[in-house]
Amino acid sequence: MNTEHKQVVLASNNAGKLKEFSAILSAAGITMVPQGQLGVPEADEPFGTFVENALAKARHASRLTGLPALADDSGLCVDALGGAPGVYSARFAAMEQGGEKSDAANNELLVRRLQGRADRRACYVALLVYVRHADDPRPIIVEGVWEGEIVDQPQGEHGFGYDPHFYIPQFRQTVAQLSPEIKNRHSHRGQALQSLLARLERE
Image (cartoon, rainbow, N blue to C red; front, side, top):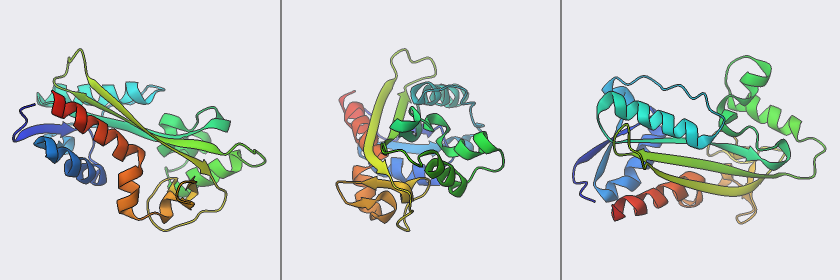
C-alpha cells in the first residue's frame, strides 16, 4: 500500500483515540487528522450494532472531506445482561435513568444490574471500519475482543469508563490497575488496530 504522507480522517475528536491510532498507523505511512479539524460534525449513531455505527461514522467523515476515513465503535458487552450495555456503553445510565452521561453512574447501574447474578463474564469490544472513499463497497472491518469479568468493587486508578470494574483473570487485576503499556498491548482497541495495520500493509 503506497501510503507515504497519506492523510486519513479519524471519525472522532477524541484526543486519546487520535494519539493511540496515530502511534500504530504511522507504521503504514498514515497521518490521522481528527474530523473536527476539517469541519466535520459528529455523525448520528442510530444503530444497535457496533459495525453499523462505525460504518456510518466512517462514510460520513469520508463523504464530507473526500479523504479515506477510519471510525471505531466500542463498548462493554455483559453476558448476563444479554450483551448490554453494548453500543450504549457510554450513555448506559443516562438512557436508563436520565441525567448526564458519567462513568460513575454507568458503573453504579452495571453493578446494581448484576447483583445476585453468578455469571460475571463480559468483554470489551472494539470495531474499526476503514473506508477508502465514502461509497467504498468493500470497507476494511476488524474487531478486537478482550475477555474479562465484572467485579463489584472498583479497583485501580488508571483507565476510564468501566475499567475499575473490568477484571482480567490473566493478570489478576482490573484494567484500571494495569499500566498503560500493558493495557494498550492487550486491549480490544490495541488488538483491532494491529489487525487493521496488517490489512492496510497488504493493500
